[in-house]
Amino acid sequence: MKEILAKAREIAEVIRREGFVKIVTHIDADGITSGAIAFESLRRAGIDCEIEFLKKLDVDVIGDEFVWFTDLGSSCIREIVRSGLRCVITDHHVPDGYYKNQLNPHDFGYDGSYDLSGSGATYLVSKFLNPVNHTDLIQLAIVGAVGDLQDSRECKLVGLNEALVNEGVTYGFLDVERDLRFFGKQTRPVFKMLEYNFDPYIPGVSGSERGSIDLLKRLGIPLKFEDWRRWIDLEIDERRAIVSELVRICIRNKYPIGYIGRLVGECYILKKQAEGTELRDATELSTLLNATARYNKAEIGLKVCLGILDGDLDWAFRKARRLLQMHRRNLSEGIKLALSRMEELENIQFFHARDEIIDTIVGIVAGMCYSRVNLEKPIVAFANCDEGVKVSARATQRLVDGGVDLEKAIRLACERVGGSGGGHKIAAGAVIPRGKENEFLEEFNRIIGEQIRNGAGGI
Ligand code: C5P
Ligand code: C5P
Ligand code: ZN
Image 1: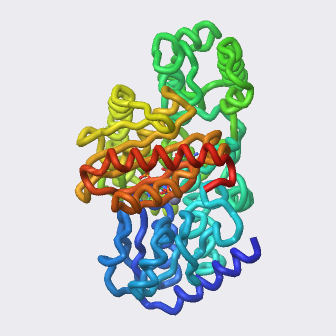
Image 2: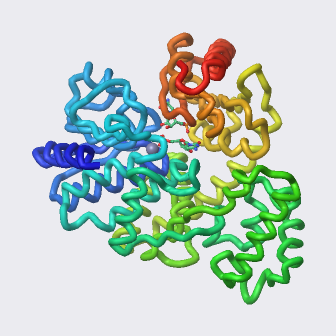
């Protein structure tokens, strides 16, 4: 921790020497929160700035201003160095080289998939830009980590993230609750929350409105008083009864204990935000942010983040909520399409969404498919995009523990077909030329086979 903080201080000092900074960030929840932290901390430090959101970094089109890359940049170090660009980087993707002004958990022996997010790395620098005026930014750092599913392996944030969680609690911005890990505890009627949960899949409940209502009736829990009751409206005993019933169903279906344990975990509540809104719960807020930038509306997500800090939320929050409704529809239709097209090769499974799922959400859809498909093979998803074909790959923790490294596999496969990509062991992405899908699949399938044969610590 000491070394990473020393690096954060060094980077803050480099930034402080500049009169103008261009922030370049990524179009997902972690990217928006990273960008918002950088934006707000520069504003507070009296440094002029502008912000640009990118789907994918192309170093050649950046221009000649001083740049602060957040949540991206690390996988393009070689290009950045070659281009002579003046910049600092706060990112958590696997770096493709060493760069002095880079704060990346991988450089300090941490795992960028779990121990620190792009927004966490950016927050560490913001501490030194505004030593007495940064504490509220911690809210955004936690939302970014949760948005990247960094709590997914252990059902809680770990590593440097855990230190940030403690900081958020100490500063009075965060509550940590051990609770059901289902989505929508703040905003959805309980029966809808149960129906829409697929992680873990609960037979008779997941995907079934009837089954979800029956479960509540069986337990004598009223669905409605004046309004539909949400999880946050339930009494503690009612919540306990539901969790016990879910556990019973899992046991009846012979689920492994480790899997059943995933029902409950740490949940992160932004205690300064209004109860019963998407802003209150880190998971719901990260989905709200994804619903903006992934549809080319990052400025709305940014405005929501800034509104979380200064309370001025009205316009942006309303717009973001409307986008969220569309995002939810797109995800649920996307999953249906993906499941109907999924094909298996020896070591992987894949689908091609063509133009039917947009490239910016095809990775989310691929990840969500795991609740319904073979858990023993990585998923590869294709979607057409302006630059060619977007590839998104997802694995499970078990596969990663068994040697699968999607980031390496995608880089190697891209070398063969002429694309470029990066990411993490458990989730990686790339863009490849049109028409190269089969060649990519063949190579990717071969590499994953090799990784599995070599086991953990292999290629
Ligand atoms: O671009 P970035 O690194 O910020 O995104 C990380 C990606 O990894 C996210 O899309 C997240 O959903 C994915 N992920 C995953 N499963 C995990 C951890 C992360 O699919 N267990
Ligand atoms: O786009 P997707 O959600 O599949 O991205 C998964 C991971 O791969 C993310 O961490 C993302 O930043 C990374 N990625 C990348 N280069 C791309 C596409 C995605 O490094 N061209
Ligand atoms: Zn990220």
